[in-house]
Image 1 (cartoon, rainbow, N blue to C red):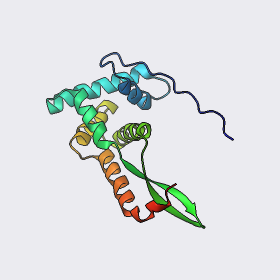
Image 2: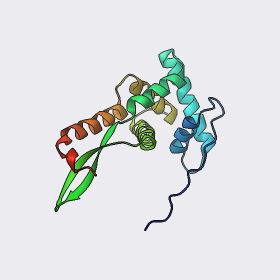
Image 3: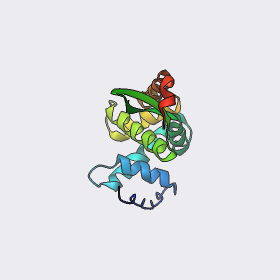
Image 4: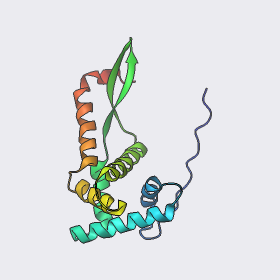
Length: 155
């Protein structure tokens, strides 16, 4: 029997937008505990997004995050010696987590001068429904659709 699940620590909202989701994003963006550096990168990226699009950077970021959020994913399950990819709905907490991780991962893979530039470009692309993070979501949905025949194995 496993022990009790760890309690989630409450997140402090960020200073500029007073949003806990921003803090969660910055915590994923942060390296080596350098939170203020991560906040600077994030805020610079939003300023660049606002300059590029002419809209408020925060709103574009929220739209990009919702565009990248997956609804279904495939989970591996062994049944009778064979491994099947079974489509399953994604829990709300995991949806947000995946979208944040994908946005950050694919912005790091982009080419640009600074991380703020790369993140800004990925946010703009994702808000328009393009870019690598959005493609990852589409691929995930396509994989779930292709394996719809195994949905009856779900427990």
